Image 1: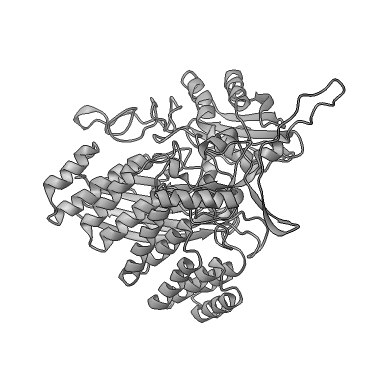
Image 2: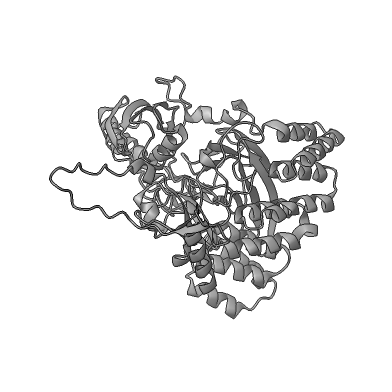
Length: 614
């Protein structure tokens, strides 16, 4: 820890990146506080002077008292200060061994070489803890949204779905009687109209973080008027300091509109460039999660959401899209030829490596594919996110690449212990390798690791279930029961004894929002706005700031298959491509089985079909 701190100190003082520092975009006072950086701090810099390279020691300007005829000094450029890009130390003050390397580059532009993201280039970054639009302290917290009086919130009175427990649901009565079932209401965000210098995706993200409050405005009125439905049209202005003025809302019901306007008025946005920003945002509300039959227009309702992934733009573009298209048409030689040519042209392009690896996998050349995916590690050894992504690709290759996957996960955890996904990936890779003790120890380390508040909503629940299942598998393999139960008891956890199926979605990009959609054969649809399937199963939380995990769990035996799984790049943000893994975990009480489905998504708002599960 002392060595890491000294490396970080020297790196920051010299304005040179190291293994313990990364570039940050600091948008707010909270960001400066989070990384313990003074707003007025000025670091020494190297300059070219008369005698060559010199160190210029800088200090905060001391303003002399103004004389009678002096003009007052100009005010500081707050907008520039708010966007200051600085080299920040490792978050060692919060996490003893956490490094801020890893993450994705800035990424803007068009074409294969333009949308940089985390897949192209070697910018050391990680937006919420590195370069990009990092944020903390937003959202409803680890228990999921809790605002609703009807729906998926933790305080809901209607809409928790089937089974016993809170709310009305199937099977809740005694003697096998069917309980009453109420559909979960749907709240859909329409397309915004934005005039001014603030990106539409940034505005959408801030609106969505307040969606539980907006939902509550509707749900509390729905209690007295169960048929209430329709569209609310809102307008507001974001001032140069990021506050909201002139928020208005009309439609559906006067009290609902008034409440929504009040919520929008409290949102604090990043400071826009070029003055005030005028925004118009529609919301569509339906008590049944379907079409409201009202204003309609261009706003997608809950019913239309089922077909969004079939109608949107394709998720891939450029050369990778060409390679994957050839593979779908079983033109394996064509795909491999294209992939080899691309890799020869751009050997450091991660997308080219992905295309080549996919082409080799299709030809069953596992050893060559493993070498290609391993090249991602060689190119970016200090990027925890790309190490994990390479490991996720290697996992799909099976036992032949397991050792390399475990090694890269270990190094990713050492570099970024404050990322939940690293601990989980390492634990389950060890489990698949037969190291039950190592897997159990790895997941306990993930549980014991402190994480930034509200950074990974729902992760505590996922980790607790992980520990219970890995403990059960360990005990089934004759592990030391007393030791295992002691470790669990110390953390208020239990051995899992019921079967379950979980769909776990990761993405290795930060400060963006990838949505998980699960549909069953009975017409049920679970996603962030309706987090339970009537047939059984729950999406634990909606992570809107990057990485995941997002978990959909079905207790017992799945009864409504086949389940159709897809993801939507809800908000690309500044980080470019989305890349990650859907992992299916089946637990029978004593054993775990896995299926890996890695993915790449390049187009904002596009859907990726991740197949079905039966």
